[in-house]
Length: 315
Image (tube, rainbow, N blue to C red; front, top):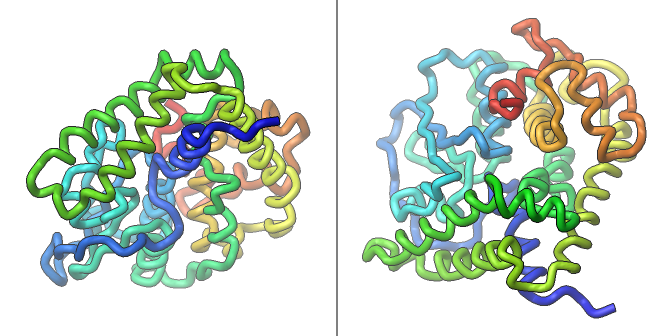
């Protein structure tokens, strides 16, 4: 059996990183400029379709921050607004969430959530563990299924719906902003993104062989299902949250991950939402995973349901 064409491999790798921030620091890029004066109100750059932006928003909701404690700025990923040179000066990876606090940018999910836990008005949230690195592994990336397709039917739906529009808008934004004089310091970034995003468009347009893409899409969903059924239950406590009696740093990441995956399979924002996952796992959802939808937070609502509601994933 011949391996997938290089463009299929590149497109699949790109899809795994295409929406939202990752749990790893960015590689060396042009020096950042300070986007906000020191000691100003922290600014959270976020967007409703960014899976990992749910993690800091959950943290803010749970950790006692006042409504006006953190300024929120929307960066519309669906229109490629994260590719402006202005945003690249803040976060050279162009990912969300991004936080600027005391003049310093925090440019990946792990850094952002950790800052919010460390500086929370309500102390006592359990610090993060190695579980955070696990939930951010590319092998179970919750971003990928939004754009992946396992067969002709799924591909046709993506190519005629939001996934195609999303990728097409990104390509147009990349082309537009990369041509600006102020984009020159980020030429390498733009060139790489245009090539990778363009590869996804070729998939949707049927301009490349699709067998490899379908197989890699199937494999990714299989890994997600196996994680839910086999690995996640082993990591969860018998009762309470990963962080104990109340949500801890790990829980904010898990809540975001579960909300995205459940939304993608048609789950609702209530304690029964887990049932939709069984369409993918082909097995009953383990009771400890079900319990993630029933844990009540300090606002007397299921924590997992709140994570979906915050992101509008069920609408």
